[in-house]
Amino acid sequence: MILEADICYQAILTRDARFDGVFFVGISTTKIYCRTVCTAKRPRRESCTFYPSAAAAEQAGFRPCLLCRPELAPGNARIDAVSRLAAVAFNRIEDGILTEMSINELANEMGISDRHLRRAIKSEFGVSPIALVQTQRLLLAKRLLTDTALPVTEVAFASGFSSLRRFNALFKERYRLHPTALRRARIPELPQETLLCEVAYRPPLDWGEILSFLGKRIYRGVEVVDGNRYLRTVTWKQHRGWVAVEPSKRKHALRVELSASLASVLLPMLARVKRLFDLAAAPQQIAAHLGSLATAHPGLRVPGAFDGFELAVRAILGQRVSVKVATTLAGRFVTLFGEPIETPFTQLTHLPPVVEHVATAEPEALVSIGIPQVRANSILALARAVAEGRLVLEPGADVQQTIARLKELPGIGEWTAQYIAMRALSWPDAFPHTDLGICKALNENNPKRVLQLAESWRPWRSYAAIHLWQSLETL
Image (cartoon, rainbow, N blue to C red; front, side):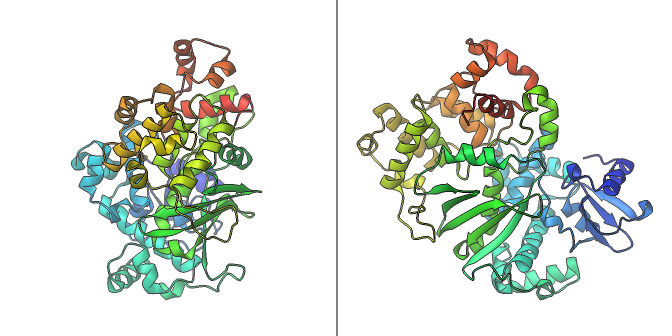
């Protein structure tokens, strides 16, 4: 990533939020690095150097600012081939994927060589994947120390460190502080059994429309929109719990409350919140590209997926029926396959169905709750493909290959495959051109002509689809 120093410094002077998270500034007089939006006294130009990532700034010897907190900066939303590859890998690393697999396994999942992945990351962010991992773990630990009352030992292991000794040593080496020095008073309104964090985004964010979209497509029992909040249950490996999300009243961020049972998997939970609400998007850039289509609602996002399999099942249930009917079937699906759970919220009664459980079912079980035979077969074929590892429904998977594999499954055509790519894979250029609503919004009945009309919206056609649906008030 090429950084023009004079342009970067102008962003610092104006505290331009559009560059928040795109680069960081290291200040030689304090040996601290900051976000562009930091409210501290503006540094002199000769004191500033600029870095494409927090890891690069830390490798250069800077420690994170305690005021603007670089760990809270929103992610990047790049689209060109090499940059997007690096950004996808960065997001997966930031999400904690290297605690589960090696860099070679991550490269294989993305369909590239580990050498190419290392080279792309080094070119884009100026550091190795291992350096990114170290920074990500330290920044997570910093967040947990600041925002929770977890014991330091639990913070160390929740952040991905294998030993408390290694955690303390690296923390003091990098930040010149003992971990306990970051502790602050307990947040009085936060119950002992919950955690509270914030995840930032670049404004504008049309929160009301996102809640409207999700509220009409919920898995009843697993998730609910309650006023201005989104709540859901979570199962992640052996961990069970719940998450509640609402806008922060003071800043451009979402306030995320989690059950304490999810403390050790906080990183993947926050990653899924960011994915669900499309917080890595650059809305001003996208709206400028879409032109008049985005004028009325520049803050629209593409709602993602907390879980790719969950979203794909919901897409199949929505084939050829109304949103309301599909939501009813989704509720029955939860009752059939979801494990009951007790939560503080009366409407959250079940955990989301686990793919391994669904994969062993017989079609008759799905037919018995009103799912047509054809769609029952599709869901079971999908579940088996995901459970066996033949299909990966996560951001970073090869999009075209995944679409092709989806379309090989019974009952999955172009619309379903594109919709899954759009939301489960977080692919910004997916476009379900056969969708009746999109055809109606464009006043065009020929799908091929719809594709031609959408060419000018590349590489943001997923956002164009959301705006077209919104124009019909079908969100």
